[in-house]
Length: 427
Image 1 (tube, rainbow, N blue to C red):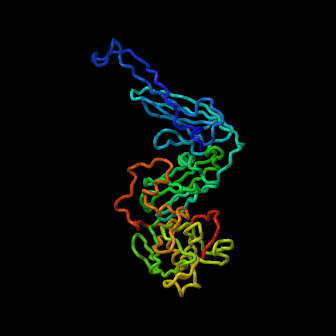
Image 2: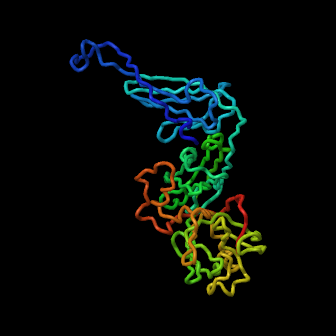
Image 3: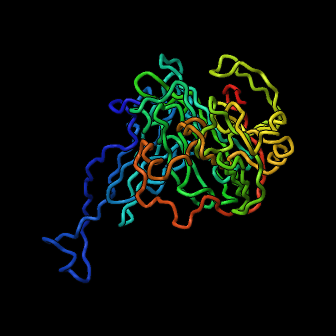
């Protein structure tokens, strides 16, 4: 969104006009100046949108600035007198409607502030939203976090954009991305440099049993000079048991951990030198009982093959999957097109153990994982991760000293996320 034209959430504070009262107390010296009592001021209040504003985006929030008091009541109604649910931001600067406003409708906001003396100030503002037709390009957003799932402890909240979000508009978009956790485990957003993807995670892995609710509230949001948000997305899910996979190219072995304990070692065959696997920290993105790898048109590709028990690690087409044709090489040499090939029996066992959101670490291969090629929120340390935030990150938000690569957790389940609109490749 163009900052110069941005719909301001923080209204300009208007000057308070003291309302004086005359009275007396038992201690005249402390209460009287020139024969009059100290004025008991009502709080001053400014509300946005300003009264009678037209062409307001349907992403509008009710902003309020108060002096000498605090906001004690907010009421938002539509032009039929129906209440519009809204929630305050954590900093109290505005109230966010729980759903997008409607186009070409008139809304009334009534905000009350109460001062320390108990005196109140109430201000009303009426505004009208813009008509639906617009010449702005709609930005398609996708929330890669769905409801009623049980995710692994490394699962980031991911939102993708097409076309990408320009750097100057990312702060405005980020302000409209909301994450709540129960019990509280605050985190931060981080943008990939190309603006196609933004990820949210906490400094440490999610604690097992954590409930996470997400809202990507972008419907009607002006984005830069020429674009607008497409729709709102919401989802609520939970975090299950801790499972993580460590793959070492030097030994050609995969170590499977649950709750920090080694369950099993599995021989693997990784990408051959001409198509090496990526080294880095990844997250299982989706799971398929059976799928087809079609690499026609891909560099070093040109084949079509059906595979069983496939688990995606990157957008570029790296998977863990069943490869009975390479069982003789697994544990000894690399023969794949970049995937981690395991035996049919091992792949079937893994499908019953892993969850979307489990961490997978690969080390010792010829190339490093490109940031943004998959869910890469854990591929960098916390200090590097928060550099990608378009908004300030609280300085006290830091990893705990006791955090480990394989944090313990308790029982959960396994349920794959829906397949995003990305091509299938692999090998």
